[in-house]
Image (cartoon, rainbow, N blue to C red; front, side, top):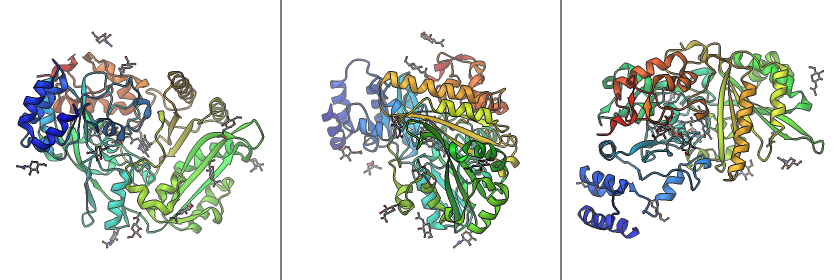
Length: 543
Ligand SMILES: Cc1cc2nc3c(=O)[nH]c(=O)nc-3n(C[C@H](O)[C@H](O)[C@H](O)COP(=O)(O)OP(=O)(O)OC[C@H]3O[C@@H](n4cnc5c(N)ncnc54)[C@H](O)[C@@H]3O)c2cc1C
Ligand SMILES: *[C@@H]1O[C@H](CO)[C@@H](O)[C@H](O)[C@H]1NC(C)=O
Ligand SMILES: *[C@@H]1O[C@H](CO)[C@@H](O)[C@H](O)[C@H]1NC(C)=O
Ligand SMILES: *[C@@H]1O[C@H](CO)[C@@H](O)[C@H](O)[C@H]1NC(C)=O
Ligand SMILES: *[C@@H]1O[C@H](CO)[C@@H](O)[C@H](O)[C@H]1NC(C)=O
Ligand SMILES: *[C@@H]1O[C@H](CO)[C@@H](O)[C@H](O)[C@H]1NC(C)=O
Ligand SMILES: *[C@@H]1O[C@H](CO)[C@@H](O)[C@H](O)[C@H]1NC(C)=O
Ligand SMILES: *[C@@H]1O[C@H](CO)[C@@H](O)[C@H](O)[C@H]1NC(C)=O
Ligand SMILES: *[C@@H]1O[C@H](CO)[C@@H](O)[C@H](O)[C@H]1NC(C)=O
Ligand SMILES: *[C@@H]1O[C@H](CO)[C@@H](O)[C@H](O)[C@H]1NC(C)=O
Ligand SMILES: *[C@@H]1O[C@H](CO)[C@@H](O)[C@H](O)[C@H]1NC(C)=O
């Protein structure tokens, strides 16, 4: 079968038809699909260069490259029939057309960071549309906007913006290899969230291909669909090609610090107080909090390590005077403060060396090795009491190698001003911080996985006593299938509302409206995609 691919590249398309029909085993879905792609494309040679079937020697490496969660890299993980790596819009249109004809589900992948692998795993016959070639970043410093390809990473985007003007930035996430396609279409928060809101709050236009193969922009898709595409799980409505984003101002020099505190250093009191202070600080100052357990200096004992990480759009003296007034107990000193360029804060936040910032941003290999993982999220509306914190610590002491982690990011500032219906993400004023919870592990064993999953579910259940309920809230960019999944056989708003309300609360119904308008036959669907308001057989998109 390797021969097929070599011949395909050398002799093009007519030979393939005869050869592959010769080689084909009966009813192999990918063969029919591939024939259709080659037949319907305007340039079969170009098309043949972006098709990876399991016979292709590069299939596995392409599949794995953007598989960011090793939990979905196992031999029993369902694999795509085909991976397509389009370089132009017409190839995507052809893929939609042929997949309908041959009954393959499309999964769209940009950076592959989906916590549940939804961009590259499915329980039905599927192919991956891998968007990593859509990576251009076109910055227009005059209008302070940029058109960014879905497959561009956050790091590449930040790097390109800085190159045109280092006073301009995009308000988005921390992790450099996360891509625009998934990130922006689910919200997207980072160190500028208190000053400028979410990534999706800063979207001003989008280009997308819908289930009919039409290329649409903001104007032609209409305001409901455009609203949905900017944070309401973009992959429910079409293939996002590019987003146009608004750029924001950052200082030439910022000040940052990171401080570790263990229980012996009053971490419990400090974390308690943080909940009152951090959401109310000036908006150009963010003080985030990472929590994990470590071995104590006392032999055989564990402790909690609370890391307070801050970045301020101003000088060290001002930062110190704010901290002294608002949070003297933390004991920040001038020696803790580091002056940085804006982009250097990204490696700094992850405790990585800042002398490699350009590489850190531009590399498509994640800054730390991949792992097996499961994440969850919550939104706090009031501070967790001391006894609640102590229950969390006890849970953290139960697991090791590596321990669980949380990252608490304060809201407030700009987040309080944006109405909860402005974009699909609803959790604004009244939500003082987001609690990200994650457990990692480093091997494929089923028992290990079960133990780690049980731990984070337990943690989540303890947190449940102290956070927003009715609905229990979650962040759609931290996909969590424990919240519920669509019925795989029938479209049902009632079933989908269970997880849909957790992510979108009252905005869920408007998302359903947009979905019904743009994709009533539910071509774009996955475990947690917005359903159209037509109850019926799910695979009705098959032609
Ligand atoms: C290590 C790590 C760090 C993270 N850090 C942050 C952070 O700082 N802030 C934050 O807000 N979030 C963060 N996230 C969450 C991240 O924003 C989401 O997982 C995001 O969806 C990833 O986007 P992606 O394109 O890389 O992932 P993908 O897995 O490619 O996509 C995610 C989802 O979007 C869909 N999708 C992708 N591309 C398209 C497209 N072109 N058109 C339509 N649908 C598409 C996919 O089908 C899938 O459902 C982090 C995640 C990880 C794993
Ligand atoms: C078809 O694609 C190939 C490979 O990308 C390219 O070299 C060729 O010029 C294209 N042909 C036409 C007619 O555009
Ligand atoms: C395919 O794999 C070979 C060998 O691993 C490598 O040299 C080549 O660059 C790969 N091609 C693509 C398109 O990834
Ligand atoms: C897919 O199938 C596997 C194995 O049957 C099952 O464990 C898993 O829950 C299914 N996933 C979804 C989202 O239905
Ligand atoms: C860069 O952006 C800043 C902030 O918007 C602006 O004041 C400055 O004039 C810009 N510099 C250039 C060279 O365009
Ligand atoms: C904080 O703790 C982490 C992990 O234990 C360590 O790598 C880091 O150097 C510590 N930072 C400071 C400022 O002590
Ligand atoms: C911890 O806090 C208590 C009361 O707030 C204070 O008396 C004590 O000095 C603090 N200890 C340390 C190590 O900061
Ligand atoms: C902590 O100690 C335990 C044994 O007491 C050991 O297994 C574990 O690896 C240690 N963790 C770290 C991060 O050193
Ligand atoms: C970068 O900084 C690290 C320490 O943070 C140091 O070990 C390394 O040598 C530095 N590299 C360069 C190229 O300066
Ligand atoms: C950002 O731009 C500034 C000014 O041109 C430059 O000094 C800095 O090195 C750039 N940062 C990166 C990471 O390239
Ligand atoms: C969906 O249909 C399959 C096959 O008929 C069946 O095994 C499965 O139980 C159904 N799932 C649900 C949630 O109804």
